[in-house]
Length: 494
Image (cartoon, rainbow, N blue to C red):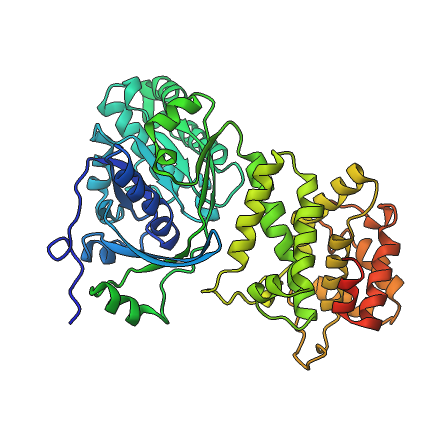
């Protein structure tokens, strides 16, 4: 018989409420709250989280129904070994819906121990909405709610410099903290008449004594384990309806705001002292570039190469005697050579990425990665191709072959084993590739794709035929794939 999960049936620690968390979804619960739980366990941080539902519909009732207790199921490889573990998270004290509990939400600003604000309101969450009014209860946008909360805190503590907040957004936007800070400043200007004589003082207090940090987060979180939930509940002996599954790898890079030192930030939030992969840095940019280049970059070219070689799962591609070598060539010999972080650090990250690709618990279909392959290649691989050419004086064959594989995949038809090839992208890209392949001339295909500045290369707006040697190498690979097949073409560059 399964027990209900609540604080009467399971132990729950009690700690001062120090963190306001906007968002109650799977990612925050499997990443941020898991980090805070571990920081509490292994340091003297001693803080709990108040969850605030950022939109009018959400999961706070579910959370409160279990007294904010739930389990995180981590799966993956760590140092070569398969890991499948369950941890009960107990660091959330309560969950609020500001649309029905606005008084309780605003009262958070009056709690002296509150020091941190963390959020993940999706990429669309950090936006400025000029229709928001200061008198809304609450403002509809997340930055609007946060500005209301900050002003109430400013008033409550008479502008006390020690009552500013450390704000660490986790939305998947490059320089998310910078965008959030800009939105807050816009709300301060929009509502200046509402603030009246407090306008200048509040603006100065926010600017000087609140610290909005940009962060980079990295952990794959599949979410609720529908297939395994019965086995998991049997194992934990609780009817936990909020189990969240995630990979074991995690990384949180926190860029110190310009008005706080790295030392103070790390002292106040000592997650790195808990043995967690949390880094406090002056700039998140190199880490953002590293992730896009060494994780997303190989993914983008591995997928069509693997699929056209008859391989369906990312893990199988990495362990394949030929395609596995191709992945490592692209990652270590080509893309890694274009980055500017210390080489040992890059090698460690690349090894972690390969462990993540080799996750024995996740059957990651290569076709799921191939949606919108051209825009992905433009942002993830094209910059590396150009830098490699600049630094080495030659083109990176693995990346060019990856582009040839994408172009071949967009030809459609069937694989050698009869499996259908079903590309998916913007209709204008699909129409262009269909038209080019109808010529049965690989040079026309290569020249047409590389020159499609209005359809494919919309960001760079560059005719890639101008890159020395690229057109000829691409034609060579397209011909080889047509004549010999993908696997033999891959072997030719290894």
